[in-house]
Length: 114
Length: 115
Image 1 (cartoon, rainbow over the protein chains, first blue to last red):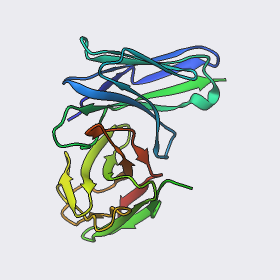
Image 2: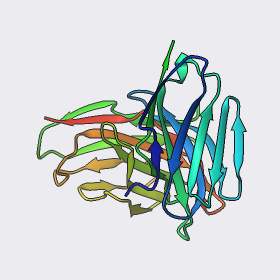
Image 3: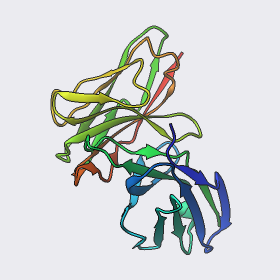
Image 4: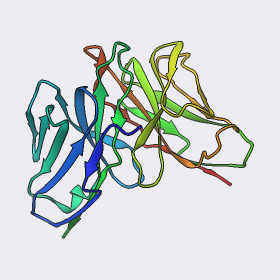
């Protein structure tokens, strides 16, 4: 079952604008992660935020986490054509079993118009 | 270079045949995973392994089998019992982060097409 759901499914903006993607999930989590996937390629990790953190930055990326609303957002500032890709959120649930994987949403397809 | 290597990148199979997808990592990670991705969809977990000689079923294990004889290797066999095997298969590995799943490192994927 899909734990995370990204919104919007697709987003097209002009180069230089900011892009915001949202993710909602259903059950309590240990951490939430964002990944990027270029067409036909593997996923690349962008950022991990733990359940006791509210905001995290990495370069032009800003991630927020609201555990009371079970939601997260990914902001990409000053977008570039090279940011065109699909972006996925993924959750690690609390587990006594250890590293039992992440549950992924369906992704947001971001297109940056030059 | 450290990373994950998947092979083959493209694979064609006739109905009724088993195929094995290779996944090798040199990151010294304990945990390894296989995911399936269908067009326009997210990733779904097939199998995962946290230590050598041990593995667990994910959400969609039916029709698949794995082995973990070495820490570096986690091959996936798509058997003839898998009803709709055409998909993009992704292998990943991770360290165990405080008893939970940390950052996943992915291979470049294997695209399987059943003719």
